[in-house]
Length: 478
Length: 111
Image (tube, rainbow over all chains, first blue to last red; front, side, top):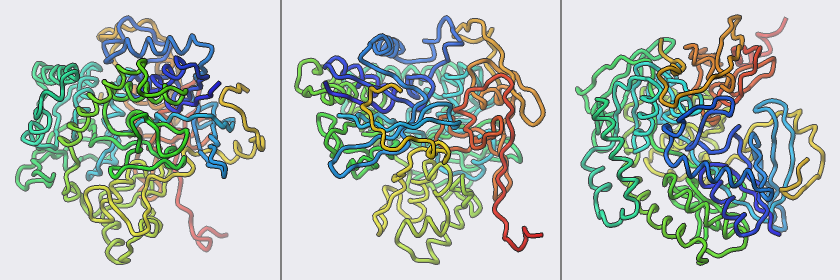
């Protein structure tokens, strides 16, 4: 019987696990969080029951049925608070997946498994572009505000400014409102002409994705009813405060996101939520040896196979596409990983859904690209790498004075991207600033900030305690 | 008041009864709801920062909220580098601000 290891218990991972079980594989799902559901279905712990938690979620029923089916299935093991800290490739092509579990960031137990098939569904995290003052307490990623609202019932502020780009700003605003925060403004950097051109063009392509359109329309209606000012072609260009956020300066942005002088306006607030799209969590795919696309997502074929034999990918690591695409890709990945074919009737609906929602995802991506001139709102002393406190001026000076064309040497000279987060937050911004490019930067040494052989920090003591050379199938439960 | 817990009486999810959890941070006790993270309990009490950076000595707290950025690391019961947004608050937990000084030159540190 095939052993399938699924990494990530969000929509894609859960759908993969369910499909792999349906096809008869033994499945183990792991997730670093305490509860399944991923960021999309992040929810309250069992110790906090409520009457109507579903009002905070979309497709809550889909999550409940996936979860119940998997939890009651003896052929499926779900291990939460379990993290892959490294993946190693052996000479024979097999992959050793190194896990750590136990208290988060506490004393952990390690285990190494060698699965027959691996499904990566590691998702994405928010990208927040550096802005002067963005290190002040009270500045959060948009995802943090939502995580606190949905997973803890906390409003991150009283008067909140939401800024960035993309449709994710809508659900974040809705979550803040449901938590009792006052959203004093939502500032979308993209311009209405661009958004209209890409959202509304070729409407026949969106047939079947109509509930996504009505979901977006619902958010727009919510804004109008709730009188949340929603401005397009605007951005937060500076955040003010001494020990915590006190105000922001917003300004009109041109088509490339350069602030237009003379349009600045100061708005008092006590929290700022930034979300400039998403960064896929690629380190495990990179460690496994999976090829990436030019846009820096995991390359998959029509069966969700990566370039590495036995390794599949689904969800936001293949493209930022939202929950429907993630569910469809996950189902196909799990089914094929367990020995099925994507042509099988059992996954026909998933195949159709994937094609439909992939088009929707492409459209959102082209409506909300990162503007080429975003860095013009930086000041010399604006921190870019939050961990190592490297500012924009230093990056510019080092890039100029060393004339280095290799990313590795630039990183070592500036220390940008070498801190605890390993460049997860600043990586792409650092690449763009050092290379002077606005898209996917290319360096002479071929390096990127996506490669992180140690995918999660581990204490030396935990490693020292690890038994040598114990490899188990994913279903060995110690 | 800025960061705060949602008022259960006004919460649209109609929450059931909860248990309190108490942690200590910088000598003060803070009460949250059992099941909340260390970051959640602190934010519920409008505490926004619990780390001081090494170079600029600036305050930091929650940023990404999902365990990616490591900005929120704190010392819990003597154990360093614990992400406050990922660690569930346990009753009686002693939480300390983390401030890692940059290494000093041997000549300056000596004697």
